[in-house]
Length: 570
Picture 1 (tube, rainbow, N blue to C red):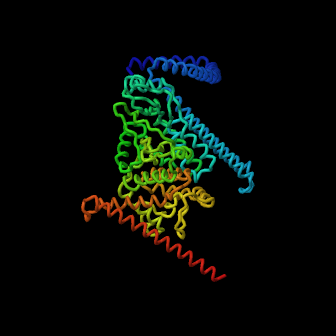
Picture 2 (picture 1 turned 60 degrees about the vertical axis):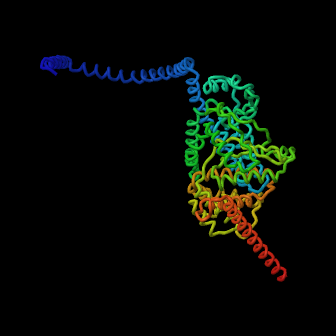
Picture 3 (picture 1 turned 90 degrees about the vertical axis):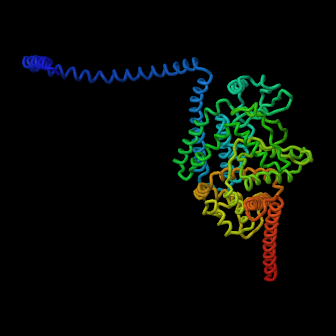
């Protein structure tokens, strides 16, 4: 401030001081009056201003959004639509979760309070509650689509843990999914191939023959007349994937806050990358070719051929294969095929992947395995949907092979050792989780269909030892989670077919065979000649079968001795 400016301020202050001295009582009163009146007026003005701003924003926001939507291109419109729909999916999922939780709380603590759990009224009341929960889950999954349907399909494999109302209702998700309009199909082809499918193919049926969780399948013909199946991804799925994953993570955080022991967020985090691979159909095509190479020695396996010039990251074109779903018992019988032969081939196929190749199909639900009559008039299996695969390291495969063998032979020290090789200390619980059934160390047999008591035991274990189960799963190599899914799905299909074969024994033989092959290839002592490796594999298999028969005969002898002592006692 300059000297002149300072003098002006001083003169102004002196002038005001003189006025105050002339009118000593007036100025304060005027000041106070003005002060109080302004304080009373300001809040009213502020409230009015806030209301005006809120009304303005409320009216202007939709108008601005609609104007921007109208002026945007197709891709920008799709992204704007995703934001709105993503918010809707989150709110819908949260509402369904809270509704189910509230229904269970009300049913357990109010409607059925004090009732005997074995009484018909209690059983009927809980069954109705289970059914309402399952209906709400299916409705929410179908309306949300995408990942929500895939998660619902995954729950179907746990038919020995979940109430039957859940399983019977969730199975509808294997055949139901979002059915998109033909304009969306044309738009996707324009983006990926710069032409519509009716110009790209000789013929293209816009009505899908199947609708999956991530895509729908159309029947078409190549220019030479070859029938093909064209798998078309839902156009907005790649854009909404990250948002759906984030929504599920938030929902799982909320569930964990309400139920601290129910922490599944880590599972979603570990599988996020693997699930993202399913959105890349070029990756799926490569997986299918690798699977065909790994299983080429099984002449009953059919992998549809991929046509790469008509494939992109969102479109997969492959041979069209007829067949019935593998859980369609009447469809298999109508072709004159054996359920036993079908189940045996299914189990051997996926056991080969788990115990030997390590490249594992993680989603073999019934819709992805078709059965048809082969040239030898026996069952052929058509494997579809190769998007979700994971690789199990050789070290872990060897440990898993030895563990399965030791379980079948009831070799408890070996069970403990090989469980520790996989990072698990609670070995007995892990073995029961792996086999998805109780293990009685005093009995050798393992029935494929659980008794009522065994089913009750598994459900009680899932409820009462949930934290221990979580610790076991967290300590395992991450690919083992998808191995569990594969094993559980195959187990479920075998039961649907009537359990015509001994799944545990077939998998044990595959485990021994896989381990012996790995050992033969790694051994420096064996000549690198196929016949020596084959002889080694046969020798190990014979040793296993001999050991099993020896243990069974000893168990039978002990049972006979006990029976004879009982007779003598009488």
